[in-house]
Amino acid sequence: MLVFIDESGDPGMPPGGSCSAFFTVTLIAFEDHDEAAAVEQRLALLKRELRLPDRFEFHFSKLRTDWREAFLRAVAPYEWFYFSVVINKAKLTGRGFQFPDPFYKYTCGLVFQNAKPYLNDSIVVIDGSGGREFRNQLNTYLRKRVNEAGDGPKFIRKVKVQDSDRNLLLQLADMVCGAVARGYTQPQENNRYRRLISHREMLVQFWPK
Image (tube, rainbow, N blue to C red; front, side):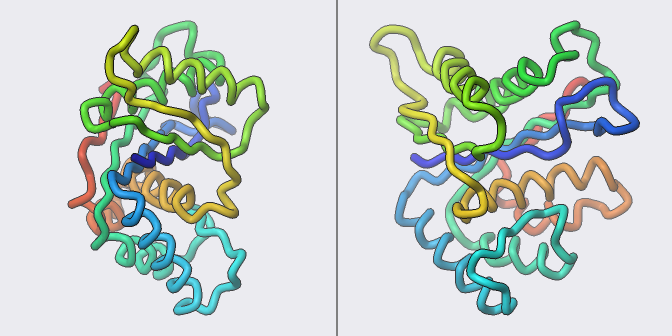
């Protein structure tokens, strides 16, 4: 199984000013490697359809509305699914949330706990942003929090770091995460993007309410 992680907003506190009101982490999963390869091929073709350069990176916050919709429509027919956790920072009270790294790891833990019944021997790919120490901590944290002790099932086999500008499936995670987050940051749009992939949604947890 292949899993890709991305986030929208930031884990900075307090909300307001330079810090976002919400922090969203999204997990994209493919049970079949061939299906993941088919999505990569479709997105490479989409670049040609939109007359974009081969090295163009799909990033939700930087795309035109019609390109966002074209992207989500292009990937919607394929077999993949997603989970998201949206953190409502205004309702957080714990002291640990004042620190970005623990905040980020905690949110990743929530989304993996929600997805855990659907994961099996997963290769998890995260974007290469952040320092090496933080990535190593996240690797250890996810393995300890998600995998069963002893001879129990291993939901995560390994955690890999890749650059999103060279990984179309990390860009898929970015686009889906952006679509989910947009429904909270701009509710007047009535989830126009999220509706395009609603049949791929397993759970979006909004916390705390």
